[in-house]
Image (cartoon, rainbow, N blue to C red; front, side, top):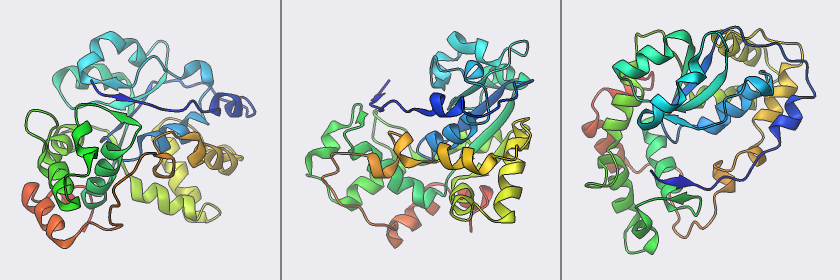
Length: 261
């Protein structure tokens, strides 16, 4: 399993400044990798007692059996991970409020490329950082996968997102979080974060904006775009038209299923 080098945050200390109401039901923050997992996690952490945050592991299918205690209904915890849909994951998370974070596949391709090229990612793709590949080569590898090394975009979204649809998991789009963070003082943001926390079984407290601001601070996330290091290759801000067409070819209907047009 690849490793990710993440700088520790100080959110536990920030959390203890606020009055926290204990969870009465487990909460699992699931996500498609490179969809803003740490952003969502850090925001929700600000509304849950530190003692109820399951930090033993970022839960994935390969290690699920070792971390089923995260979903113990008698001892509710907030946990997080990239958990693909299967009989085992459906059974274990049946006790929890499940939130599933997704991202526009067009933006996801760029985010995955950026992360793989950074110093923070340590896996079996170090050769991608050599500079021998064109940007378009790299983007295509993110869409179609790397033979025997990394899964394709379609595989990741199918198993980590699409197959969870209709199961009771509450889907949230990364872009919705960002839009409401940019308008945090608006009534729309209050509605959005109230709904999101409500799906977690958490009531919206009066100081919710301060908590959200602290949790969403990029300096608290080692994998936030602005904190990635070692980027020797410049990527475009928007996916090129050909790669957009390749996304649509590789996973027809995917963006529409996720609510993107």
